[in-house]
Length: 538
Image (cartoon, rainbow, N blue to C red; front, top):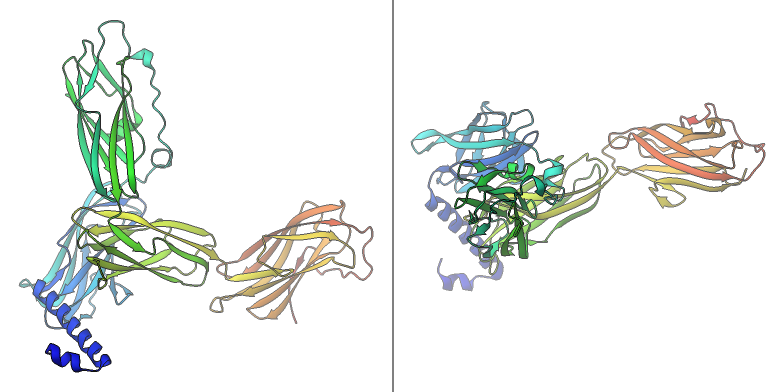
């Protein structure tokens, strides 16, 4: 279509024509890039899976042909691997090695979500592959293979990876001597990485030399935080980062001998000007400890809009969706190839590449959807994304939060879902009966109050409960009664409301009050079962 002809069209027709031309251009570019059925990447390597958890990676399966392709089978080898097909934001779990039929239109793509289960696996490296069978010729074959290499690693220990690193406090008396003294010299005492990107893994090395006359004992190498790892290479052996953390006295440098200290910095989650320090403790009494400074300025390579995701308050039976845009302004193109989430997983993740806006070089849309039937609690986490990018393999700066409320809401004296039942001063015949109204906010989940029981340090025959059904499966009233004077003026206990419910089978409310009467009211009714009640209809 010529430009002049396009400009003479009405606005709606011109927009439709532009969309059609854009779709044709995208299809042509996909076909021109690789006119076959192919994966978005050739393999996965160095995938770390924490023992006892699940690691998920995603790969695009692109139909670069000009014809409709039918997938007929997916198989997996090499361990506990599960595959889910994601198409148009819909997830289709695949039964491996079983025939099926799924269409991929010409010049389009779907995603394969590959999950590696290490819940029962042993530590160490492993290999496997995912094989896709289709009715189209794939480089002269009918199958397409994706090799995968992963390593099952130990889960991080709280005392090593979460708590602050303790300051080194070696026993100097064990290593010092009165004879010839050692002297530690470094080739340099600082390193400036300059401007780097958040998510990059940096590395530099320092030369250590004993220029003194006595033996130099390297007692301890301490890092400022867990983002900085060091490895020490002595003349006779290498000392791992784990050994540097947990042990002392790694080795000795004779006069004139050298060692190499490799320092690695993981910049994930950092931002702005950053200064890290590594300290070397030796038996050089005049100079120990020696500090090595690592200086860097960390920029965020990607823009997230919004910067974090808040689901707010979510009902346990409710599913809420939030969307965030991830874009690159000056770091070139990238692709999201997988993700990791804290366990237990409370959200489902979906992502796709979207058209760029002004000044953007690449953009992806990430959709987070809260799961159904979550535990009623406040959930805070951080999404870690695996990237296909020349400099940044992972990024974990996107935080999310949600507070899960139960499906049921209760009201006491116009207060919504209070944690306590405060009776105040109880006067016989005046305010010795309190009502709780429970309402099911999720009609798709059944809810039925079955009993209400009182527990207390004083005899429970002082109290009684009654359940009134206001609307079957939806609304119930629980009446809490003080039917006779307790032994003490002040009393307290717990009201337990049992129900047939998946999300709130038991509701516990602490109660307290002060009895102001001296005798049992004449018109007080005695319950059929002291301390407990069963439902009654209205």
